[in-house]
Image (cartoon, rainbow, N blue to C red):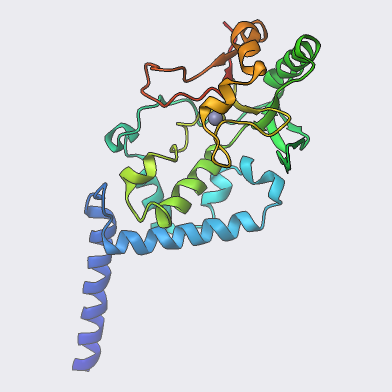
Length: 259
Ligand SMILES: [Zn+2]
């Protein structure tokens, strides 16, 4: 009888310690505690499994509520707790966009650029129409045009990426992770109306893959054309040099906006 009591009390104390470490102790932004690390790994693994059951082409638009539904009560609460941290406290400087769902998402076919494919992308229809008109005009003027390398990415996708990298390359450091991955709502690619598009040339120049730098993109005649003409089609460079957000210069990243 005594033994049973000891076991029960031990389990109770362990559970209490688990809950305190998970929910009471404020996450240290540089090193999550060991319980938070274990839970982070579990969440990342469950998100991975969930995404693997979704067709590859639709993983970029996974719905946040659908994604988070694969977690248990404690994990869901932990995710909420992490995403309630103001990213500014983690050194992330970009603005909050939106977590609302787009009402007019359309599928953009995969295109061959250089030796690779862009993969199927998605865009809100209103911005995609303007992109098509812009690409037509660019083709007429230059004999070449830009392609959609990365379009809409849902807040669910950002949540998946955030936990995936937190448990892997960022080694459970929220500050390290926030340098590379925007939290749900903080990526312009997830904005349902004024959404961002990353462009690339027909040779696959996008300024960031395969050891490319932004200088490679700036050299493109398409980039120069965009600076002069994109505004006529409601596209604007989001992060110019020395932008007010303190975000690095991204010459490939443009957003739709009705001014
Ligand atoms: Zn982008």
